[in-house]
Image 1 (tube, rainbow, N blue to C red):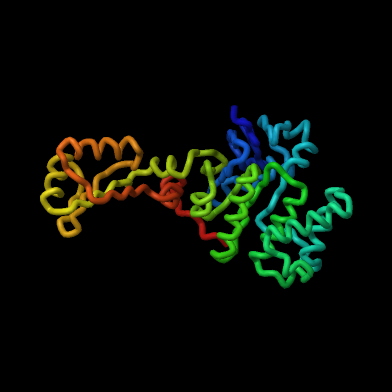
Image 2: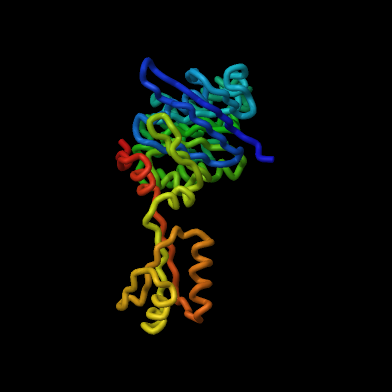
Length: 312
């Protein structure tokens, strides 16, 4: 039986006459990455704030890390960590001092706190900068330190609210690897992001939020198959085989120069199997096959009716 890190039903939140969350349901299995995508103002940050006990929902039943969000809020806080959109480190302190301060806030014994700080500095490749003021750190280093501080309390569930906004590609990929390592250790990650590539790279499941409603949910591949435009490109060794394939299938766009045939299809295993079986029945050999499905940008545009925003 799958253990859930988050189980939310009919989650609602309004500010005056503005509905921010309009009855959303979420289930996040332990030890996975769940990504919540959506345009600016869709309700992503509000969702994180509710699930991490920072604000109260107007309605809904929610369990986080096995605890009731309302009746057992302290237990929820003890099981989670939160890394917001903007780094929460103290720029006047050193990296080491930030981590020791966090250990003190968690009431760790002094020796244990220093041991934990040293371990996290090593894990996040910050040893050389440990005794330098955080004001001298790059954006990527500050984000790594921010996440390291979140881990001082050994959370089972971490909320990452747009954690790589503003980072250069190298720093983003370094943080991605940290996320993968955490999940391998059994930590659950709830990720909000505006980088669709990030969700594609990291998430086991993705939900698309728009105007306070969940409009789609699934794996990256499942979401891509919701959008028309997928196709399978077959390459043949010679023109005779290409012509035979066109005759056998009766669909597709041939390219005589490239010896390819582009056949509409969603890229599913079933579609590929049926296509190859039809060719095999006519003894038509395929030299190469490529499957193209729409990317998450296409999904975002089609389902929300607008392109993704450029992250600030």
